[in-house]
Length: 479
Ligand code: SAM
Ligand code: SF4
Image 1 (cartoon, rainbow, N blue to C red):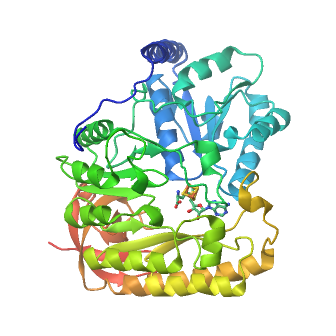
Image 2 (tube, rainbow, N blue to C red):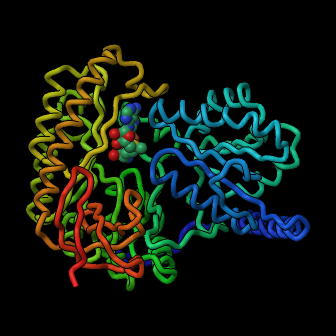
Image 3 (cartoon, rainbow, N blue to C red):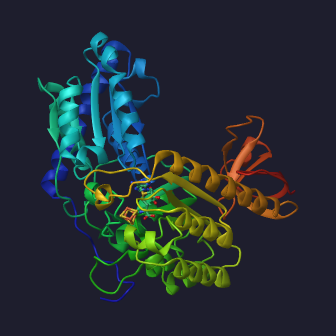
């Protein structure tokens, strides 16, 4: 098969697809009848924790709910259905979920018709499902990451069941295309290009909750992007735990660079972004594709996690500090205006002061535009959880604060370098911090606030930067 040949991919079993569609249609009828009788539309609230992958799954759930004549709400008091889409990457996220579900106990007592569903990564762990059953018996439905497409049927069945309905698939199935969801067509759209992860970084729970890596076929991705663009989307972000290994599970020699090149040809799309890039798999053809593709934004999120080679090895990351620095040099040689962002973990088991200095040193050498910094969090079931030399909490926090200060100082300096320059901004909305202003992002993903008429929302405008802060830029429209 040639690289650009479009192969049709695995469809959801037609009978299953048909069954879900019929359920959606029935629910739609029932909810519209309810609205006629009561004058009230059924309302659903989705609370999402964690990464863009989860955000996008919530978007799919909302799409199905809208087809069932539910309206979205962010007010818990008026919701008929509340869904918690959970994350378990760090303990903090988990604790928040438990606290927030618990807070619905009284509301459920007052309103017995209220439906509560819990889904997402946490539910892929049997002990967590057990604890939900025990501590939160008022939850109506529990499902996992691999059977989201069965949500309409599960929802209906849970509404007539006497007890909590639990359906979690242990194993991921094939990729399911054609799920009867309806999406939000915004200015910016997320597109999954692959699911799961094969890397098994020793600290990370994701491979256990999202399953093995599976790439979607290129034709399905291109069709989805074309469809988004026809419905008004101007910027697309391709999602995968390791986008650089895209294609490994597909027939033929299809790689991420081929997908980028193909998507760069889609008419009407202005900007293409992607995340996350694993440094060990970021190939020269990908760098070349970004350099050549006028729609491919000059921003690479390239998590390095730790600067010490000893820690990187213990994390099973598959690269060294020197290898990472050499990769950054190659990126900057071919894409000089690329912004680089990263993820860093502080306090991985066995991390000494000296190891941490390597992290600081790498931050200073690369000079990242910004970084997500995390305190290492023990995840049961991962190899790092059993490593003996866990770092003292106080030491972790001290290192964390030092790192954040260093990163912010560099971000501020990089941003100051933009003052006086002209940038291209895709105008997204009214600014969240100052409603008198508009906000948008540059191709490098820099947040820019500026004064302008709301009619500019959705357009790409030239802005002159007049002031810089640590996390944003201020500018004025160039007329
Ligand atoms: N697949 C992406 C990658 O490899 O870069 C990241 C996925 S993960 C959801 C996002 C980030 O969470 C990781 O890059 C890592 O920095 C952080 N993370 C994952 N497990 C963690 C843990 N146990 N403790 C602290 N941070 C963690
Ligand atoms: Fe987790 Fe590593 Fe996979 Fe990222 S690449 S999802 S950090 S196992």
